[in-house]
Length: 358
Image (cartoon, rainbow, N blue to C red; front, top):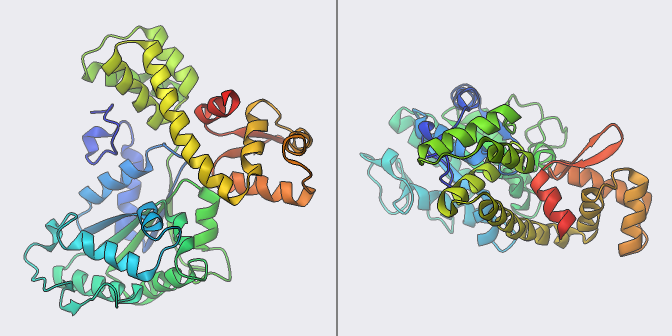
């Protein structure tokens, strides 16, 4: 169902994403490393889960935010090993292990003790699993930019393990998704000489918001699925407010279906957005309280650098030019804003509305 608010897991639940889905599957088959990029709530997680379900090899999905949360703001090798073995051994999906004798945390003959094993030990185990089953193992990390909190060296130890697998373990592939696109690129570092993955070949798939007409068609088809006849002008109004970001369109469609009213559905959707964005801003403000001030300035139309600086200093005190530039660059990398023709603009219109009214 298109309006199911949970991440999708079957192709028939995905609307007009066959091209992106085939690109992801091709990346899993043909490339050691694939990157899936796109702004928040554009549908990357759903596409990744569908692709892993269709992938003929062994696919392991890891929500990196879960690792970050479990480690209270850092990710240790032990937390990562625990999560992978949890997935393999019965509290996650274990269909691909049927027929493989498992003893404790035994992966195809390699005995792993989660608290004593390392990330490289797990990779060696995955290689053996691939050899035993005759299938390539793909380990997919959703919102992988959080892996920069792995270990004490900004994730370099994690990347060193990936580089080892790239060079020496042909039965293993990796997929990384990221909403903070610039941070993901910086973390993986394929173009960064100091990165363990420098110069490695990878595939990149961008998932974009729907264009306007496709957004309208998405809502029409979703309402048709649940047996609702919705006035065309309300569909157009919804797209005016929510743009082509599938996550918000799904929220609106689901709420309309349950509440039977455009106004009630839009109000509920925006309230949900406020709650989600508040959580994201809380994490952002841990890094610097000026981030929220910058976003507020841009949301109320202060799009020029000088106007943003004036607003930030009026609300939060002096800030150097270099520091403001650094903060703006970070917001671009994190997928909050974009720069066009010398102006800074919010990427997500719902975030812009929430920030403007907040």
